[in-house]
Image (tube, rainbow, N blue to C red):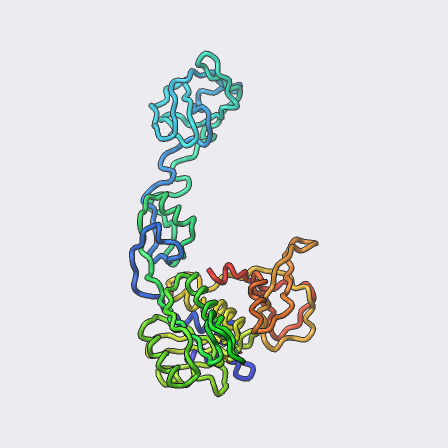
Length: 414
Ligand code: AMP
Ligand code: MG
């Protein structure tokens, strides 16, 4: 990967930005698409622009319960007009004769010739005559045709991930199904002889396999179809066999653990035997080791084993790759800003993604980040307590109260 070679700095380490850019650059959107009905559309990614077949609203209509009138019938002190008809929503009326008005209700189509609605609170009604004691301007309380959407305009561009309100918008246009990218198939496997499935007893030195469930839940939440291959034991042959199996079944392979340089870390050799591998040392905490490459033709992302690192690197690096592969337009959410109350006198060597909650700032209302007290890469409770990640930059000192980048987990996992 020559593009990334150039990004290394600081003793063979890669900046977090360069690692993300390299993953985004390497990702290719799926080519296969399918038609999906509205009820099954949530979370899918549009493969084509959606163009409105209709004007919305389809006709000029009343914004109020009141009386439809012609502004030309009004003088400076108002008008007294006989009520000639009654028009309810869904029931078009007759053209409005000059010198008359129509009782009308919210959403009902304006009768031809009428150009304003006077709300009922401003009208006194006596013997079928409506009295309004002020001048009325054309357009008052009328919602014009195509005010919201004009026929032929693009309402949702290709690459949009469908949210609930978008399903409603499509329904309002009478569109029953749309073309989306097929789901990305992701093979997931976890390395480590020490990891045990929940429900099994723990022998001395063993720990439960948490990464499997964190990563599975994250991938499913973002609309991937997960091929869950479970745990792989720490041998070269087992790792290699599992990798070949994963490559055959999936569009992307995601692993956790086994990417450090320890003797029990076999991912590197297995991937090199079956494809190509870059082992990155990313200048960040938590995280650092991150592998990227391919097994056969299937791209591969190797996340670190520590549970917080696995989750955070999936959020920051795996997700951007996945979004591009799913056909999404925006690979990474824009950062929000939050204040960091602590001064940073000595510059950090590695960028830190601190698990924080936000509190409302006292002076100007800008949110202030509060860090979970234990920020170790094995402290999974930090990710549960926190609402998002605050980015402490490397190589600079900062005064207390600096405004820094913040991402809520909501947006990192969308
Ligand atoms: P490794 O990168 O394989 O050296 O793993 C780093 C640390 O993460 C070790 O303490 C592992 O026990 C732990 N770890 C690795 N995989 C998992 C997993 N699936 N669930 C929980 N902890 C893990
Ligand atoms: Mg391991």
